[in-house]
Image (cartoon, rainbow, N blue to C red):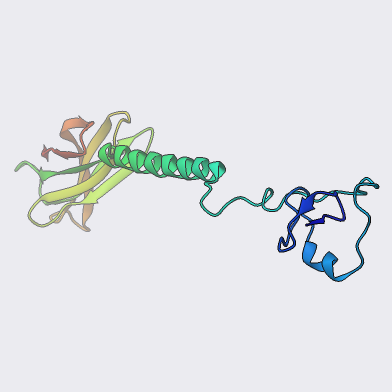
Length: 183
């Protein structure tokens, strides 16, 4: 048997590393040997394999990172489902209807005007079949409604006329509304 030149531990001749201090005995066996047991080691080596984790050993910090990522993905999915199931309400009313003039007025309505202090004048053309469509903001004050037409029998030129519609105001909190107006 031989001794480790660093720590003095007795080792078998075929041993490659000292089981006590981890010294590579293959390199030392080729060179001169040191006396054993009389000198304390100047430094020591860690035992073979104590600082390197085994291949099958799990890393606990990886588990925590994977858990955090999984919780984040689940939170995003749940948040998306909640956001998708709670639609944003519309902020305007699509108003449709018809506009008519009584027989006392000569002409055909061509414009319907919705006026409010918050939005000013919002208008829509009146089509030949007397229908109209306009988008009005929801939740504002009531709109005063005016109908405009041209009097084709005026002389010497064509004149534009208007009247306060009946009903004379409009407001709605619905996203779609229908209202007929007349003069």
